[in-house]
Amino acid sequence: MIDIEVLRRHLPRRLRDGRAIVLVTDGANTEPPPGAETETVEAFLRQPPGPRVPLVVLPDTLSALDTATGQQLLGGLRDRWADEVLILHRRDDERWGLNDFLALGFRHDPEAETAAPDHAVYRTSLYDYKLTPDWLNARFWANPEMWDKARW
Image 1: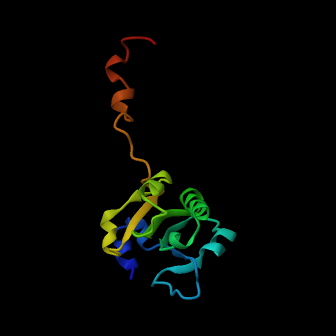
Image 2: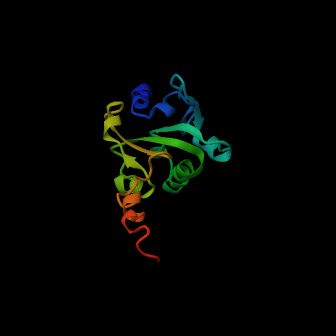
Image 3: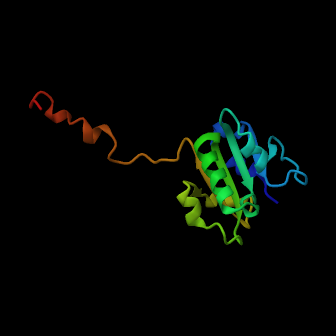
């Protein structure tokens, strides 16, 4: 059983209280966790949300999808439809590996795996997907010691 509330504790404050969608492959036998809506992948891909959704959770969803549909779903979620995406993927599924998730821009999140020990947790966020490199700061670009000394 996956504890959504434990997963939410690992999220930034701005996403804990926002709207959450749990994407599943079969909506008939799933009950949404408290504070989240459940939607099928087919319905989501047919009618994607207009504005970005703060949080989308995929519990065991990729195991039931073919690889092309899974890549389309993850790419759309990352680029257009969600601020934060959490993927809970069964470790025994051989079709998706760490490199597949890294290639799509997801990070492995081992701290969040306490919510589901038999799953690997991957996530991406619109707010921290790119780390700022050390060289990108005013210390290397402004050159204040050369002001009024030379004309370029």
